[in-house]
Amino acid sequence: MRMTRKVAVITGGSMGIGEAVAKLFLAEGASVVLSSRDVERVEAARERLGNKDRTAAFACDVTKREEITALLAFAVQRFGGIDIWVNNAGFGLVDAVARMDMAACRRMFDTNLFGLIDAMQVVIPRMREQGSGTIVNISSVAGHIAVPYMAAYGATKHAVNAITRAARLELRNTGVKVVNICPGYVSTEFSANAIRGKESRAVPSSVKRGITADRVARAVLRGYLGSKRELVVPWHNRLVIGLYRWLPGPFEWAMMKVMKG
Image (cartoon, rainbow, N blue to C red; front, top):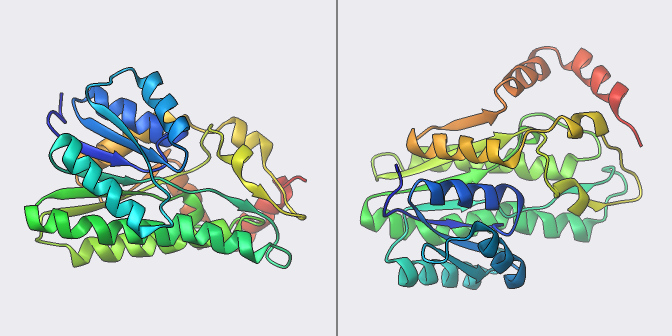
């Protein structure tokens, strides 16, 4: 087991990618603190994982810095330290730029971006002091391309990409690593839980072909063990990103062709 005696904190850990990462980390020997705003849901995830000795649940709203601070303190008290922090909490907003609800948009930025930055600011001093640690940020392929009717969500992920890359450079030679994971469509409840406005579209066929949360979890593990800068999963989405950059016109035409109400 490659993570024996390591301690990981996972935000957004009650289901989907967060739960899958916790399951894989446990299998590799780590102890895991799962957090989400709803302690009952995160306790249910802990029950499904079935390893009470090396798991703990903690209620944390990442839009409240004091709760992030309490989460870190809990992990250190419960398991004696912190080695990995996975920023996975987030949700989507599906609506046109011209009509999106700005209150919902701001709530999404508070969770997807500012909550992530707050968490980094809380945990980095501890990791710098101990001279080791890894922060894993869960971004998205939508952080590399512009998706109609998901502009605000994509904007949060473009910003996450920039924050992650800059922080990695700023923390060089400190022992603290920062890894960016960019999944494409994932077969989770993310779409069902997204806030949908008056004007939205979906790409059902792409969602049906989405990768599993377990596959994203394997990318997280690979990124952590290999101290990777950024991993796009599945790998062929790197071709999609490249096509968008080099042939934006045909790419955008094809994208709008498959968008459905």
